[in-house]
Image 1: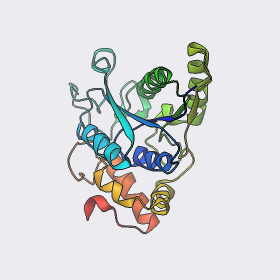
Image 2: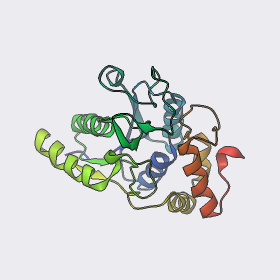
Image 3: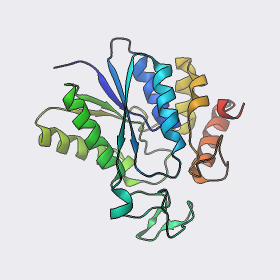
Image 4: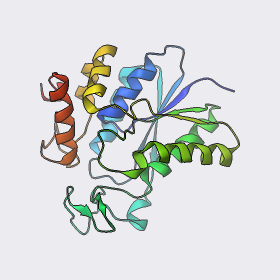
Length: 224
């Protein structure tokens, strides 16, 4: 069995932090994977490439997925025909935000596991978090635990899905990056759901990011 890790790298703040944590383990062979799924903030794909380059010794993979717009609806998708506001409730579930993409993390992690299977890697890393998050049920620990079991049984190998930020606040995530000496990596991340650089500062994702930096007492490198 090969040794290494597959890191799901969206190009955002959390996944960049996880990549820095894994990269600090110098004996790891790292593969990063991002997904082109028709997201309106496609700039994150370029960020994931740049972050992979900064981590060094990283093999980056970008997987195309064009199915979401055919099977579901979300304000986060580029072809948001309904023109839903990002911060509105989801019309199919008023307890979730309109930015929720049903099945997204389930599909991402399954594809990442298939990639890991190819390289005989058994460890997957993702930056999902249920403390400071956008209300997505597929970011919660019970979802990840269930998916880990299903993937391991379905591929007949013992995968482990690592979620090192699961119970961190955004401020704690920022402080982790500071301790790793990689705060400068945040210059290459993208958070804004509107897809503008450095960020609109008013969408829920931008607000949550700023809150984390404010509570950590650190200036966001993205806005320096």
